[in-house]
Length: 115
Image 1 (cartoon, rainbow, N blue to C red):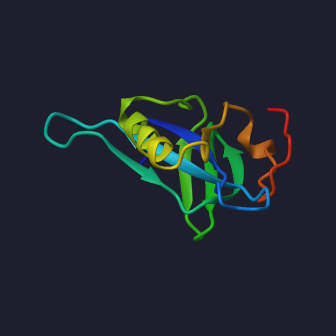
Image 2: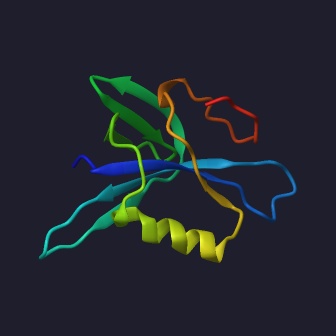
C-alpha cells in the first residue's frame, strides 16, 4: 500500500554522549469515515533509491517501503505522532526538510549535510 504522505525523522537520543543519530521513515495514510487515519514508522533507514517517481526506502529490518516522490510533508495523519514524540522526548526528534533522498548520506553520526 502506497502512503499519502511521508517524512524523514532525524532522531538523536538526548542521553547519547556521542553524536549518534538515526533516521526513520514516518508514513501517513488517509482514512475514511469508517477506518480513520493511520501511520507507520519503519525500523530505521539504511538507503534510499529513486525508481519511476517512487522512493524505495530500505529499512534496518530488511523491509522496503515505496513512497511517492512528490508527497513529502506533514499532514494531520502523522502530525499527532510527531507531537507525541516531541512532547515526550524534547529536542530529540526533527522533521528533515525535503531533498533528493537517494543522494542523502545515511550515517549514524551527526554530520552537517547541505540539503
